[in-house]
Length: 212
Image (spheres, helix red, strand yellow):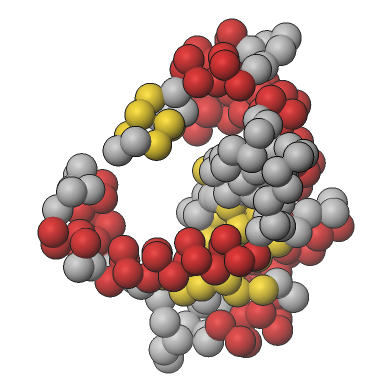
């Protein structure tokens, strides 16, 4: 919120760095804790974040839940890849297919990350890709215990290191890096968002940027 106020007219890499907090060595911009203020901040910053990130930096933005107007967001348009995170279930897949169509029509490159392996209740990744028309980058483990460790600050826990969630997340990161355009050293790169259906979109990889 403080960055949104400071960057209403212009946004620079230095201003972004001033408002970032280091989390295990990674600069993080924290959003307001509730939906409407967070959305308002993104609306203010949307036109400036992409152009402000240069020099090959990587930016990941959690854009929250996919809404009807989400495809119009400047942050979506600035992304190298918009990643939608969803469960491959009967209620979810039609909504995901609609979101993919909206984003694709807005000239966004879209990929999917699924939660949970195929089962009686969950479609396999190949079927999800066929129905939605979007590439499935990876499948995250449906690991409630690992998620609880992350949510309670267990980032340095040995249990977290051994969790199915962290192991599967490593595979996702590798797949995402392969999906992104090759870095151009002489030019600023673009961003890559992730969008969540059941949860929020993930985000933008910055100018490169990535939501769940």
